[in-house]
Amino acid sequence: MNYIFFLIFLYIFFGFLLYSFQRRIIFNKCNKPQPPENYGLERINEVHIETEDNISLLAWFFKGQSDKPILIYFHGNSFDIGERAYRIKRYNDAGFSTLIVGWRGYSGNQGIPTEKNLYLDGKATIEWILKNTKFNTEDIINYGESLGSGVAVELNLKYDFLCTVLEAPFTSIADVANNRYKIYPTKLLVKDKFDNLSKIDRIKSPLLIISGAKDEVVPHFHSKLLFNKANKPKKSLFIDEAMHNNLYDFGIEKIVINFSLKIWKLI
Image 1 (tube, one colour):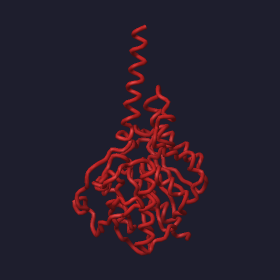
Image 2 (cartoon, helix red, strand yellow):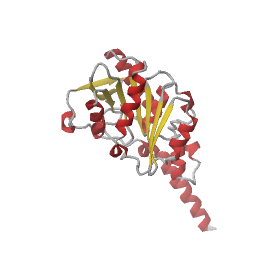
Image 3 (cartoon, rainbow, N blue to C red):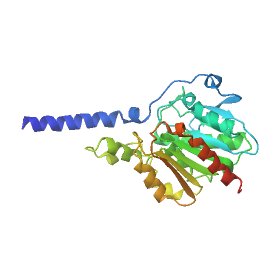
Image 4 (cartoon, rainbow, N blue to C red):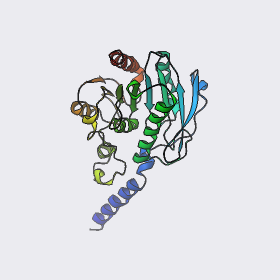
């Protein structure tokens, strides 16, 4: 009998820890990156984007060719923007304009990252582009990597983009948690749900979903479920040998560029 009570205690205790520290697990905050040139980026304007709740977000803006669209990059949960510079450089070299923004709590920014707050960060980023450049929403490639896919999907409910690219997306944070902590009722316990699956069929812009079949963080079937539910026009790039963070080793930027430019030329 004591053994049973001990197991129940452990279940409740570890469940309490997971619930209490879940945001530390989901949001791996980080310090300010080095200057852009240290990552091989040239002609970068460092800007600070103000959110409606007065948080200043560090962002790097690159002005590309006037006959190319702009890619806005919303990064994943474990990186400062410098750690994604090698990806941005590939789009810069292709003549695209780019803007990569650090979430609050990331890249040295103040503030507390939550689902609601990251939506505010995403909205502020789009509004900064519309107010400070000549780009319109139909010129924007809305790119969300992993955690950033939750923001990219949410933004589609308000804006009509040139296209949306989701890299290693999830159906919801609760589903990811359920895959890891099967003995707990994660759908009830997760605070920041980022429920992409419930919204994906409301995306109006052309959609590209990219995922690795060997993804060790977000199971590959999440991307398949999202793709199957999404409306057309849509395209998928599923790479058999790819994992969560090495998709650019397979040159996925070429697909993103071609996908975007085909739509761009139709406008």
